[in-house]
Structure formats: C-alpha cells, structure tokens
Length: 370
Image 1 (cartoon, one colour):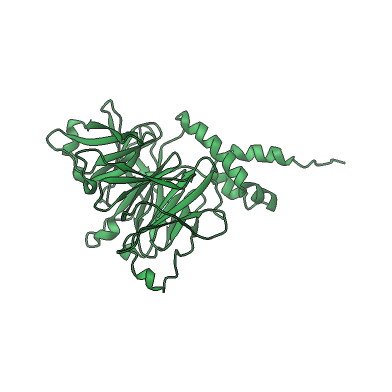
Image 2 (cartoon, one colour):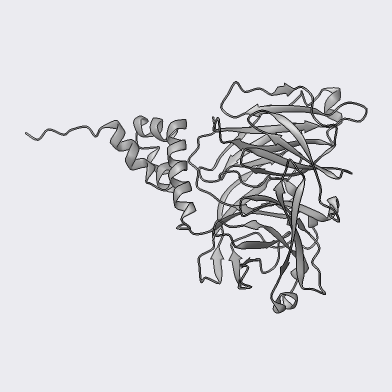
C-alpha cells in the first residue's frame, strides 16, 4: 500500500518564493495552509527580496501602472502594461476600479503599492493582488475641522529598517500650526499625532526614496524631507532658477530629482536637477536633449518625464488620455522608442478632469494589506 508523505512546510515556503504573484494569488485559494503562507508578512518579505535581486540584474520586463478616472470621476481605474524590448505596441490589462471620495490623486508606486490620497483619509491599493484597504478618517467627516481640508494631504513611503509602510498626513489650517500624523500599515488601525514639524502648506506631490518621503509645499522655496524611521523632518532648499510651480518631483535612477515640466523648443531639451547632498542642499543640474524628431510628434508638449524604469532608461508619458495613447522610452545615447497602448479608456473631449492620467512603475508584490 502506497503511503503519501506530506511535503514539509519549509519546502512549500521555498517553492512559493520562486513563483510569480499571479500564480500565488491563485494558490492562496487551494488550502488554508497555502493561504497562511502566502498572506504572512515573512513570506511577503522573502518574495520581495527575491524580486529585488532579479530586478537589479535587469531580467524583468519593464512594466508600468496607468491610473485614470471613470466618467465624472466616480471611480479610479488602474491598468498595467508590459513594455517589451523591441515591441511597438502593448495591451493594457485592467487591474481594478476603486471608488474615490474626494480626489483622484495617486502617489508614485512604492515597491508596487500605491496610495490614493483623499485628504481626510487614504486608500492603499496593491495592483498585484487587486486588494484595496481604506484607512480610517483623520478626524470625523462631520466635525467642524473637516470643513478645512484644502491642504490636508497624504504621502506614502516604506521604512527599510523596520520594513513597514507608512502614510504621512500633513494638514495645514489657516491660523494654526501644520499638523502631522502617521499611520503604520498592519498596526493598531489608528493615526498618531506627531509633535512639531515645519509650518508649510503641503502639496499633493511626493516621492518616497530609501526611507524618506519628499514633498513640495505651496508658495515655498523648500522641499520637506520626512524620515520614516526617526519620524523627523528637515527642509531642503530648491535649487536656484527652479520654479516650484513649473517642476515635478520624480525618482530618477534611484535618486530624487526635479524635472522641468516645460519643454525648451529652441534647444530641444528639458532641464533636470538631481539631489546630490540633502544635508548641504547640493543639486546638480542636467539638460536632457531629445532627438530632432521629438518636436514633430503630435502633442509632444503633453508628455512629461515621469521617471526611469529599472533599466535606467527615461520614461515619458502623456498627462492625459489621448486618442492614440503612447509612452516613450529614451536612453542617454539618444535612442528613443515608442510603444502604443491599447485597452485604455477613450479620450473624453468634454470631460477634461476625467482625462487626467498618472503613470508609475509597476512591481510585483504579494504583500497582504491587513
């Protein structure tokens, strides 16, 4: 009589760490044992570590996440698209549709996780697992304080020391000191009020790099850096000749950068400033020159430098839906390739706000949002 032996737990664990997220999501439904392994925080860390090693060797296909609103901004839609080398087209895959409350702003991806900023609260979305979790309100929505949320902003980041994801809420109310609160994912489901912090009015524009959230402020010549581990702030002066309102914060090859949103038609270039030393306020300015045919592309002024993919190449994407939606990948050897995306919503000529598009990097992440 044949005796079947049970596969050891650690063997199953090791096998699962080598599987793509798409397979893990399906295997989670096989049994309670599989589900307990795949949804555990330890497994998510191991799987993420393996993914990072593969990415560092440039073995992955560059993939992006595209988000845009449904008609009349009733919900936010998310899509992904793989940008294969040599391809001139790609199909966008629908990842999920999430009803927003007050805003369509989404933060750049942090290890594949995205934060939708609604002011008084936020929704965390993992495109890999299609799971979304809405955080509790910063204050009761029917309280008098809730009437002043113009400068109530949520930023999102990852602390590599504690391996925790955190949301920073910055709330500037006229006549009062700016209040800062932190929500740590997977803890006791509450916001913590921080003491102190700079008295600026935060903007809905932030980037998280190496355990620091950087965000811009209204009518200010400073950026704010928030250290996720120590939960301390410091100010970084913007480089000379950089206009706060005319530049975007991006992650450029793993570094913080400010990129000009206005293309210089005469020099066929765009300016970018990389933060060299945040303690000394040292920035290095660069000019990125595009191929001569760039100005011949229809609607080229509608494209923005949104960052770099893991190969180090520059990613340019439109800031709104177009009839023919394309992204461009450009390396510093002045080679540029176009990839046209299908499967996205159609351009709505009379609904401008719903045409707004956000493009960020897509990364596999099996993290279960508790």
